[in-house]
Length: 418
Length: 164
Image (tube, rainbow over all chains, first blue to last red; front, side):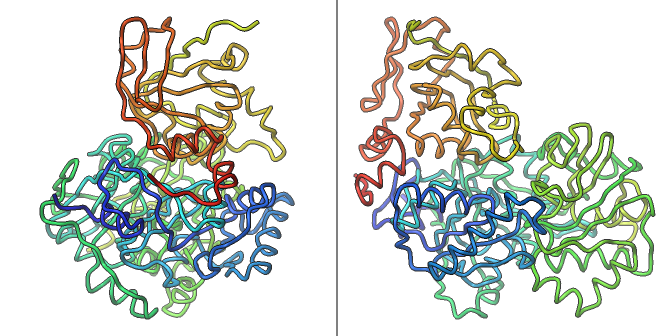
């Protein structure tokens, strides 16, 4: 019986031939510890006298959720990460470097065929680089710092084939929102989603990360793509050892889904859940108060360029608070150099720090008041995620966010793209 | 007063936001504070009624959504001996085993609220009255981890962990 990508990668990292449902202990290639879970992992190590035995280059510490920090509690946690970084010789991406998943994938440490863990739900973003990445808690980070290994239950795989020509105004965010609706709430629970098909091949790496990123929002443990020439080009800057992994022709999938993207239109996830999808045209003209482009889902260079294309020479509705958080400093620099930032600021956008910003807003940035309605390029829209439980969050592609900011109401981006 | 272990029943899709509703809780909240708010939105009496050895029996996707270690630790600290559900959120599944809280995946509709459950994690059996429900048993190493009280006590005791 053939194997899926995730079965092969977990087999390769455990020295055993494993299949879905098996428990394994695997060697970990990379550990991402951010300011939400990292400080507690350090506390756990100290409380239990666990030694740090991992090779320092296999981990990165990141300050992104609480930036610029707004309480002394988190400021002290940041200090704890900086001290740990100096003490153990671990690289630290400090405040303003970017959002964890964006900078780790930009940094060349995530490689095809690899196995990574990270202290944040959306670590599955790495899947676009053919790496199995699993979200973990502080105690698991502490245990891997000590042993270099972690146990897993090998997940089953749902294979999703995106086929067809991508219509104007439809982006990878629309692909994944459509899929979230098709699979239903937690339709991929405890499974891996493998994304394939000619529509995936035609996407840029920036656009692919949006899809792998949202695997967790369908309940999946991780998401993965095969590597191709675009993956190799992405990795070429890092002299990385490429070990790309494909599913066998006779691999067993728990479910296979085919989606014809040529039939898609711009979509929205309406509150209160990510799988609650409608066409933008069905929700048009709803007033919005805040618009946000950023996050590990949709804050990359291509996302900012799409927004700039729509907003060039135009002014947003003055009633709208329009925030943009480029997902890393490198993206910010590129967007300054190619004029995108000027276009966005001229249109009325406010540029925030390269950090998580008003996504979960654990730091209190850009909160919503009672009755406020936001449109966001982020990945979650539970009531109260961004302040008031009486506010609403609509999720969409950056193009739909930009068009909506322009008119101050939910707007189909296609009228600005032809 | 100690009574026989009882079953607390929950439905489908009980998220970790419901386990502990004060998601963005103030800094300095202790485990004792958290114990009091377990399921407070949907079952306000829960934390005062629960006793050591009790069971939670739920539908599908118990503990879905967020990666919150606390939501599993609180149940263990309240003395829950085991959670049985049709399926679990994947992060809760890891967090529970890593906290030494055993989980069982089985058809929980067959279990009535007044059953006295007897559980054998090694054999993969839930026994009650004349019924025996089978579940996929854990490998030895995971059982040892649960018995040790979770991942950290386990690696402290064993140094590392080979898998059988």
